[in-house]
Length: 617
Image 1 (cartoon, rainbow, N blue to C red):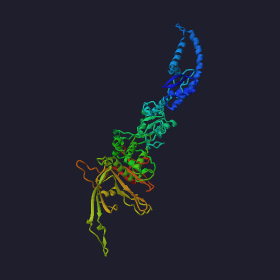
Image 2: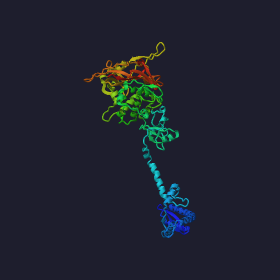
Image 3: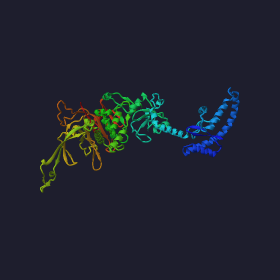
Image 4: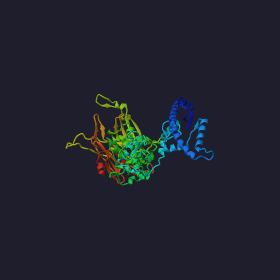
């Protein structure tokens, strides 16, 4: 007779049976209701137990003989029977009467638990030095392990959210503010995705995510860069640990990432005369910073610098709450660019309008794009109309653009009838036509954002010094186009005679000198100089203006605040702009990154192409 064991319901049973392997296999199959795979596993356990038990019997005989001698010395008074013999008789009797007795030796379990002698396969526990330990069900162990694995994956985000913010991060000294540049688009440098992008504060590169499989997490392990800021929420994290860093020393980075202004600070901008210092030691004036020319984008730079002098427009875009209802990327990028230009805590003294240009390319369907020179007049007209379309409310067709730049013209259009154009010639050479009262006249009012001024044509002949004479014309002469009496002939869309008269003056007047004209072969540039006043441009002396309403005074005086100039040939030239700083009433010349102070007399001698005048209050 031999003892076999098998596992059932997480208990180890001792079976007394014949020394027959086939009988053992049949007993194992009958006693188990598991699947075929589990039955084969238990059969292997029984065969292994059969062989181990033979070794155990031999060891027990030796141990038993020693214990009998010890027990005989300590026999009990009643009957003289040793304690060990009585326990053996009880165990043998119980084994015969009940062949399935659960074997659970607490001492053995505790000893094996202390030694850590548990096995990995099938939930089986091997015996060590003649001690049998209860084994757990292998199938249930596998299920529990799977639950633990899936539980770890499902609770990954929960555990991350449980990381408490820390104030004592050991990696704050690795932050390098010299390499930080938040002017470019927020795209991951690896996946080119704009979702959940983080900036490495050590090298300045953009990476996506902060999970274990994200690019930012991988970069933190490979490069040893541990401090990252979320470009949307502005929260700073330490990777790969994953905790949030709360430290006031990082507030300057947040201000550069997303500049903020209070309404009191906005009111004091035109009174501020203090210079700011960049990280490289250079000084710059807030609002007078240079713009990077990405590639032939000087027409955008001069337009932006000119619009930055329009105080109501600037103040509107400095407060994001004024246009938070607008979801247009162009409006949001223009607001960000405005705040960066006027921010006094920048890390560098220039700004790159890269994000704004990307929004312009998308909104204009690549009409204005990087790498292609364009006309600043066309760009300003498109930009103002697009901003107005995106900012206007559904109830009122009004916006900050119209409040600043919109004026009104009275247009008288004289269209000749067909009878006048069909003139007949008599034999004596006289022309017989209808009377002049056959002209159709149409009067209308139309709003405007800028006024186009026609320059006189340049002379065809050279002077005695074999040089071209550069003519000059006063601004008041070319403003007569809008006196309501001067006739301007147009051909398109049909032949007509036009008369213009200003009926409403805007708060900011934009004048455009039409210097470029396209002929049948190429584009010609008119070099005529326009003599204009820098201050106190009085319009009522040259063009008739409507009478103001009651309790209102006529405001017809204007001061120049921006002057865009074109230098060079039509196809090879470049643009620069003269702007005035109100706090000091000084003039500055700006060409991309170049910013320098200049004299008002130099502004008056330039070849003006587009000007912005501010109405005196």
